[in-house]
Image 1 (cartoon, helix red, strand yellow):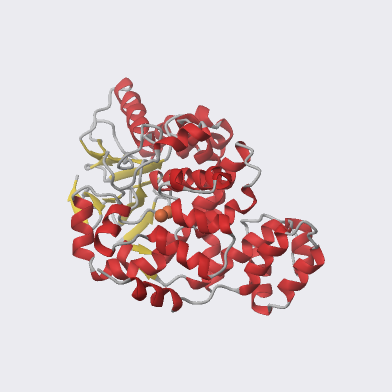
Image 2 (cartoon, rainbow over the protein chains, first blue to last red):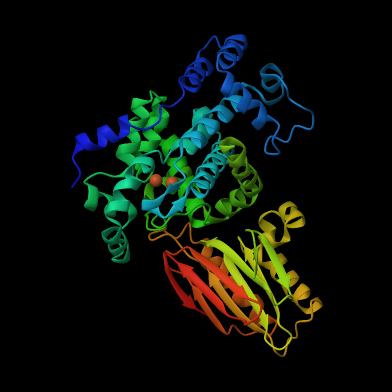
Length: 285
Length: 159
Ligand SMILES: [Fe+2]
Ligand SMILES: [Fe+2]
């Protein structure tokens, strides 16, 4: 079994998450939110600025005119979507080419994160979850732990595949081989990067949202769980193990979600998911 | 050989023996694979959901998203490309599920049920299939030989 210290070292060795995007999330949440402070913060980061302009002109955002300044991007898309693009850019940038342990390419992993981001925002909108402003971002970043755990599963790949064949869930298999799972490691990563608390919690409990301690975040993490499960059901970026999972039974009750609603959300999310997936090549260029 | 990818919510038909139709990551989605060994015509759809009434607007834009609007188009184009009903074989793959889905998430089963009903109503029989279970599959049809293979987590079977 791998020691805790070794995991911590591995987390330390991850590429750093851009401080600009973390600053942006704090600015967005200030009660006296200032557009000019938001814009200025981006413009201090020239590579982010260049990437954001490329993304703002992609078909995902669907703006017919040319966007050539951050100010214009904020005007046309709104600060929240510009922030989401900044996070997407950041995630796309730090992914390794392949998550070998999970048998998935970075592009497929990206597709999965895009799917969870879009599906969870659609669920939050329909269910009028007011605390859902960070939900798209939390969806993008919910599986951060896999970036570190993948390496260890790769080293134990025979055992990993055997245990899956024995019908253990992904989380159980990770616990058995590593003594931890990608939720716990994801939590540590998001803490280290000083991501907002709701995103840390989504990393921590997205396979078991009823364990979320903060009652104010139960719906939030519950939605990520539903979106994650739906994305995998549909095969949107599914890795070797993710179908081996359980639905937290209380969640569908809390949210009152039934099959026809899931199907409707799936049908209405697909185009956006495919377009956001295409952005990956733009980011990796 | 010429690989043609069938995207989710799309279908492709071919009568070129150099072509290989391939679709990836069928979770609960279903691939219906048609083949005429005499005329060497093949077709494949990767539909996502059972019924277009879920979103009539999407069904207009992307009929192959749904079984009821997509599968008839697949058959139509298959015949147009020179496939004949007498020689045709039908294979089905996908309809997978989460390990424990508490029923709510079992879209795969609904997809399969509706598909079977549609085929049965029109007098079509399924030759072979690989459906259900907590599996994500990749399906492939070689136009030259009619060989259909299904891959899941490293292991491959012939259908
Ligand atoms: Fe996960
Ligand atoms: Fe996930």
